[in-house]
Length: 68
Image (cartoon, rainbow, N blue to C red; front, side, top):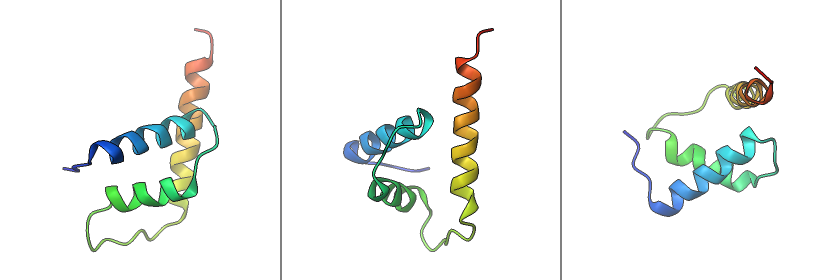
């Protein structure tokens, strides 16, 4: 379970919203979010994980914006 402070939760919420809507965001917020959500002593080994996540988020937004 991940426990965030109120400020961390707000930052993460704004960051994820910006990514989903393809808006600008601060790299420092992204770096902080990675630290907050990564278990201790675990390294992120694949730099493409974030690219995959962003592509998935963009695809979700695209599908949500399509008329049914």
